Length: 157
Image (cartoon, rainbow, N blue to C red):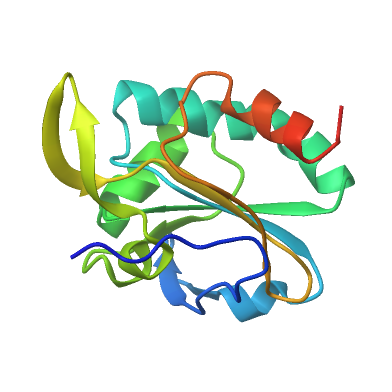
């Protein structure tokens, strides 16, 4: 049920998923670019909204530093489109309903939620370099302040 954790230097698992508009988006579309792929539990929930809006508010500085952002959840396309519209999100939201990509990245499995062990999406972020290799794998990230911490780790501040 749980994928293995990715390490720096691993080849990022390839994927093609539909975005909020039903268009196919593949990781290979971003070869030659730095890509931030982040996994979040559910659209329109408080923590996921905080995290998505953090990326939204920082998208221009991330893009100017050469980074693309892709959000991935198990939500259906209608929920992703609603989330995008309600929050004015300016990057693709990808649907992974069967959790294939979550599992390939190790972003699904046991986690602690309010002191209980549950199975679900592990809030995770991966920076994939232009060569398709994992530059920075981050598991169990916090929604609040995530982009600032990511920028610091990437030396963008």
